[in-house]
Image (cartoon, rainbow, N blue to C red; front, side, top):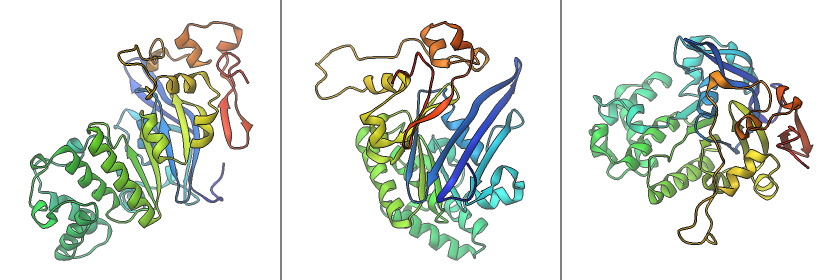
Length: 328
């Protein structure tokens, strides 16, 4: 990968580790993917697979001092932002790259009014007056369909429902009309009806603003509905990458197949036992160097001690080529 392409973002062999009592543990292990201009890329996988750490590595918001990006490149509009200074990153975050955080209640400051928090984005990045920032923030709340935005500007986060708080977090992320938005599990804590409303809102705003989107989720239904391309992560690595249409029609890696089999359908008999993937994701300290899905499934043969290659097996369709997990 390189910075000169039609992609707004290119992540190339990203490595992120954390300092722990057990030493330096790798949470993201040479992850690579790209985000085309104006498209939505979904990153999917179980909890603990490195999805959120990958996102926070891109915008350099890892917990400090434990979190460290140890290798790789992140090209944003052709520039490697891992090499940007901290002052430059403060301009990029919230300006060119917006982030919708996973928990709206923790993303919002409970002791400040909504209006102060949203208008502060305009004050920091647009350098406008307090009144103009307040008016712009009110208009932003109207854009994300907050009822009576003038009144809500005076509310505190605890006055609002979960769906309303999520809309406020979206307003914060989109305030400066960024080129790229990273949405980390934006609908996890919401009921199905509100989830559909939030996804519809994000799709509408993306279309109106022409922005690119990284959507991080464990919900393959959300991926199918919203994404152009899909990145499947397992235990800190990308195991499969393809267009959404190709991935759902022709999954190749055993882990991807397991995720798809676990989705209930309308044909699933009532009260039947749902399919699950046996075992669980290994802890960072227990990750093997070889195929990590084979490790989970208890498979052991000489090849499992070596990391599988990652190859393009058909145009645009990449897969980790473990001989046990990928059988063409």
